Image (cartoon, rainbow, N blue to C red; front, top):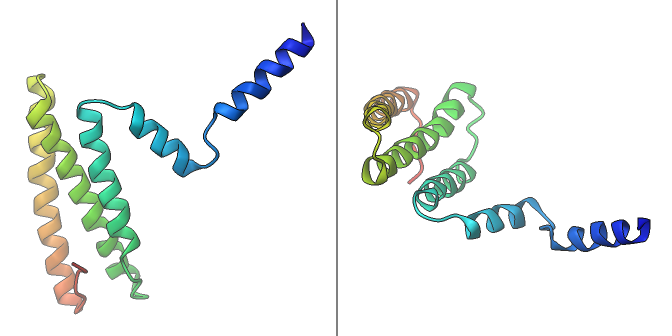
Length: 120
């Protein structure tokens, strides 16, 4: 009995993903529908944030990182508007879009004032 338990645990451990990237890929592979729509903006956000070269200015770096973060929220909210049914959640998604878009514009203006360009 004890040997069977150990064998079962060993077999299960081989089925687990080896890295966080493998876990993310496995999660994405198992997701269907809207969840795929949510993961794409998250992946794009992470790629955009990885492309940001630090300026050494805490204020500018904050803004440079927050813009892709906000864009991801906007893109995820758009998925809800396309695929969601709940009126309250759809209203919230629209509010998120409106607020995040406004804040991104403010952030871009602040970056301009600081003399820092947003990477493309």
